[in-house]
Image: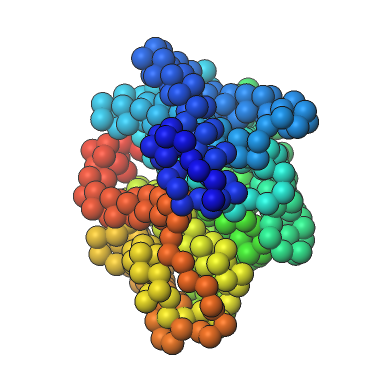
Length: 525
């Protein structure tokens, strides 16, 4: 075994549990490159980069700098294998420090940070904090699990994560649409190139087709807005007097691409395939962050700009959402693949969010909270499934069992995420679904009762999954048992902390003092 230097032993937070072929590279690069990026972060934080310019532009700029630096390095053959992942991790940590500081400042002082065509306010800040909070975790989860060209993998991942921040801050509907479409390209390549199974290409094309065909519906609306209204900026659109017919038509066309991305039945078929074929970190991004762009579009653009259209389409859309909740929950209950089960669970939970976003201000506030909760819960569950696949090369439930006795730390952390998935009290899932269902009940009690059935169904498939995987007799085909490495512990531990903190701070969802009223006041001026 290679002997580590003093610096690698004591100044690498990654620890010594990485495996012999990666230790020296990870420790060396994390320590030496880290001082450079830490200096940049401190200088930027002490200056004025993050108010307001750096909040939006720094994540994208960091991704482009990474690609620009490592492209000649990789082509020249002088960069070590471990360098791309460590540098990407440092870039996300610096981004979290800069952008997260601005977001926390907005929460504490309720100050709206406005730039040219974008804003960091009560609507966008929760999603920005979710993005920068999970970005380092996603990169960390990639360090020991990426196969193939690591340089391009981390480049695509950083571009995807970097673009998500301006997506949640932009106020121009046209710019949002462009960024929304661009997000599909790195995701398409990450699934199609780096997926672990041979069906990854088919899954990537299915994702591409569903996303871009659905998005074609909103393009005529944007052309009309730009030529007739003269702008697609949301503060101008909410004051423009659309006719009832225009609102009905535009809301219907605009809702289609974002319903695909949430997703709801019957345009959900791309999601289980993409999750099953994607690498674990990519599944974490897809479930925790990318799906939220669809819900954010309803909160920021569609409902405030065309409220009459939301009223007209509300009964039909709510019916579709409730059916999607039931469909996703039942399909999750009959799955034998752990990853596919969590994918259908995501369909059910995000469909419930879809119902809430069309059910008034209180339900919208609950829907936003449930989206944040689902981000942390789904990231933790997919990370846990990745741990199982890395060890046993299977996700089939029948081949697993009795892991609680041989992987106790993993069992506890996965159990907390499972509790959040079926909305156990004091977890993020409970707080989100309680706020959402109570808001829907103010709108329609029958819809709340029908949508609330997901709580019972999620309890059924979550307990069944955990019981089959972690209890019972240890499957004789599973011969290698190793509890979490330091990287896996950091990833699952951070997700677990998010699940618990969001559950305990639910009463502070007056985070902006009466969030629902403030959001609607912000959106409609």
